[in-house]
Length: 240
Image 1 (spheres, rainbow, N blue to C red):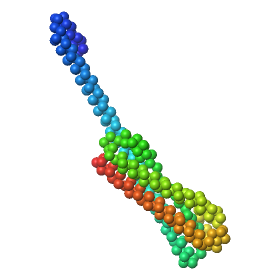
Image 2: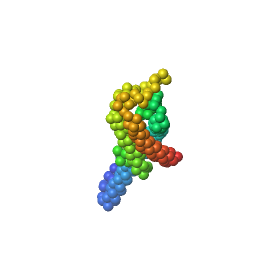
Image 3: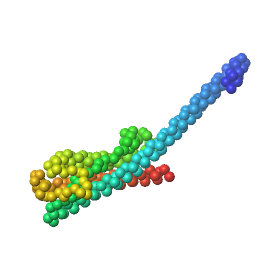
Image 4: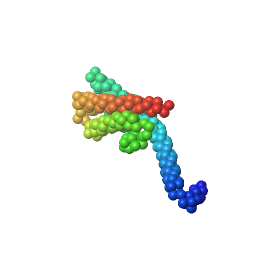
């Protein structure tokens, strides 16, 4: 094709037809420019398709992550409810005059499991400031809100950790308690607790403080779970 155009250009030049030659040259330049523009458009289209594919893969990973977090948060709610209810039962028994408890009751009153969730995919999307998103940039604010909900669980977890380290550890060591228990464990008496330097009033105060902390964190867990489920619905609706 190129030799063909060169032959035409040479013929025009030999015939001393500069105007026709100039028109031909301009036409050739225009064709080259159009070819470059088409190539750029194709390249941009291919790049766009790659970003769309990448967005789909990232959001699929996020969907999987959220499903796992919802499951974890649900388990956290169940555990926290057990701890909260056991503490409430022990307080009620104390007020009713009961003075002996099982090791399991004491363990469940003060034990806890971390409620924090891991969200590396969500964090990556938020940190990219929506640059990983193409067609669904409008979801970035929802993702930021979810990240905030997750972070609030961690904030409440801090207070629960501090309570354990500053109050419960000393209480267990002073009373000689352990979180491990078996069916044959001896009963724990209020007298033993008082001998360790904790009055009945102080014991109830510790239980109430633990209940309050669990109430706060359970609230944050529910908010995070509800937000996770809302975003999961959005992702599934958009993918249909």
